[in-house]
Amino acid sequence: MTAPVRVVRTMKYAFVVSVFLFIYVTIRVPSKAARPPQQSFELIIVMLALINLALGLNGRRFWGRLAQANAGRTSNTTPLNQWFSANVFSLAMIESCALFAVVLHMLGSPTKLVGILFGCALLALFVWSPGAPPATDNFD
Image (cartoon, rainbow, N blue to C red; front, side):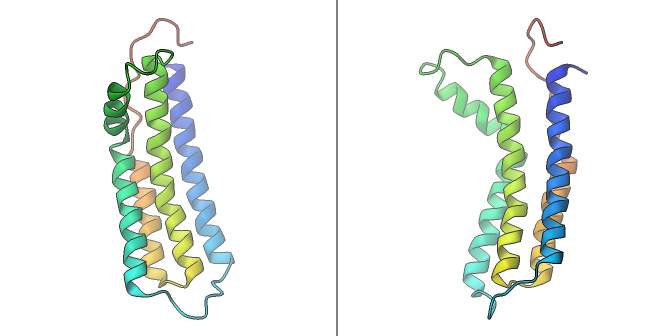
């Protein structure tokens, strides 16, 4: 395993730990909302979370297309930097699903809904893989 893959996998496990910390926070800090948010607002937040989750699972493809579209404008990015950025983007999008769960908890949403979003984020992190880095000369 090359150094960039080790770094990204280490980041993946750090993101998993942070999701568990978010879960811990939601357990320890009760919601102080007087009443739960409207269902339409909850639905919008859940849809945003699921869109971010889908972007996270397809982040490398999305980022690759974006990098190709901007290839003429940026001359200092290497394929390895693009690969690394795509993986960080992907992990951040998956993490945002867990952050939306925290937001819903603080707004007073049902525990089931918050738990489902946390579960989706954790499942996505466990399924997610960094992929192979582009071939370059010196990794180690």
